Picture 1 (cartoon, rainbow, N blue to C red):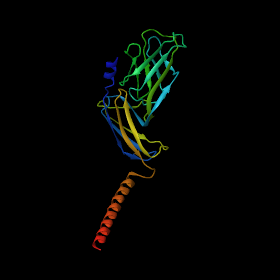
Picture 2 (cartoon, rainbow, N blue to C red; picture 1 turned 90 degrees about the vertical axis):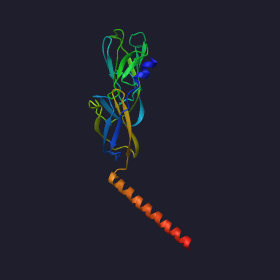
Picture 3 (cartoon, one colour; picture 1 turned 60 degrees about the vertical axis):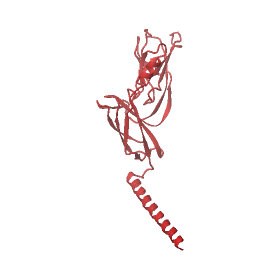
Length: 236
């Protein structure tokens, strides 16, 4: 089981660039990605990682499955998802099984460590199969996971056959100024992050550049003045 988990978590590391890297609340930012899976969906998350949990989730399925459902928050951090199936109240003999995400979009069964399910990091959709027909046996499905605020359509953004993508995200009007992490995750567990600086509304990039130039000029003149004054004092 250990060797399987180690092998599965070796997802590639993508890269993203932001344009601009400084933006006001409510403004748009272009996210360009490379090194992701070919022709896969990508979800873009914003801000700090948060803990998510769902209980008594609705699901569909018959026979040996797949049984499918969906968590309420995404994109999900690869390797953080754990699904639990509990038949204690459904006439299934009180069997509790867990399906643990190994970081590549698949989950392993707690009973013998075999791959028995999936998790879509972009859409929050999960699935699991069984080794026997459990039609008619009700189960309580619950899940825990890590996620970030979703900034893409529910289905995500599609990458090209070479694993690239370009998308525009719009910042919320209510966020505070400061540095925020932008995270892109695809369905195979490839992940990349970059930092966006949210600046006060009205402080455009052009104004920031101008203020920087003014600061350099003022600083230079101040030090020149101080140097002349110091020199004069020595001569006296």
